Amino acid sequence: MRQGSARFISFEGIDGAGKSTHIGFVAAFLEARGIALVCTREPGGTALGEQLRQLLLHQTMHLETETLLMFASRREHIAEVIAPALARGHWVISDRFSDASFAYQGGGRGLARGKLEALEQWVHPDLQPDLTLLFDVPPAVARVRLDATRELDKFEREQGDFFSATRNEYLRRAAQFPQRFRIIDATRSIAEIQVELSAILTALFEAAQ
Image 1 (cartoon, rainbow, N blue to C red):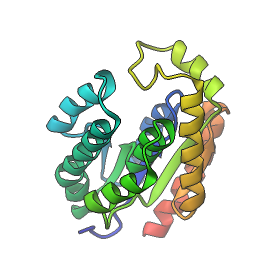
Image 2: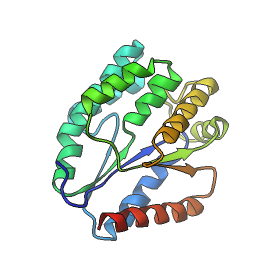
Image 3: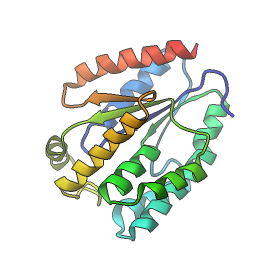
């Protein structure tokens, strides 16, 4: 059960959108206001989740196996990290949550939406982020950024059509749940994005008091 003013924030976007760049900024912004928080990620976040992460990001497998493992990791993540933190009154910042499964396994890979909805209802029927920050960029921009950074995992090595479908599903989810999504134009400078994030976070912080 959630305690007091605790809030759950998720970061979403296609690979190369730049969301990870802003997690540290958001954490510092909240901590400066006296908020105790937990920063985590998916897949991962727990000892088991990190082991599954290595398989999910680097091992080829059946689409349904991939999806089930994503939600298995998520169930452990909720039980071991997210739910206990919220129960303590801490805010939670997660680099991805279930919207990523809809976008990647659903939009990108083509898994039927009904199967994802069934897993979502099974794994976390009463839990959704209070705020989902969707960092949105065209796939061509994301590709340039990815190619300039690091060794790529199996998702990051996918082609443009995959990322277009993934992005479209993210935008569909944002339209479906406008009360919690904020779409961030991630083609702008870091400074411009952080001005917008500051305004969004200030509103969330004030509403939680």
